[in-house]
Length: 94
Image 1 (tube, one colour):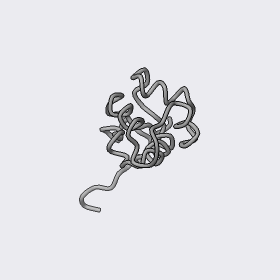
Image 2 (cartoon, rainbow, N blue to C red; image 1 turned 135 degrees about the horizontal axis):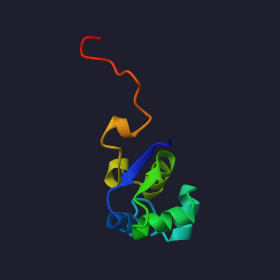
Image 3 (cartoon, rainbow, N blue to C red; image 1 turned 135 degrees about the vertical axis):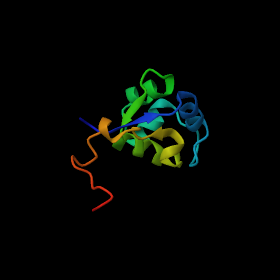
């Protein structure tokens, strides 16, 4: 299972494309080139057809935009939904 972050809002994603913190506005192709992500992923996120992105793609996109990760994406709300947590987390006694 890959780690994924949930896109908070397609509308905010489109806003970030038009108003990046770095440089000129992005189109699908120019954002794909700047981030290294696929054009299809970018289009799906911008139109709301896809609601999440792989962790590496999410980081690449926000880096291209020049914004903080949590501006656009949210990690999974529960460690049970993600492989990133240890099987036996430490307790308060440890």
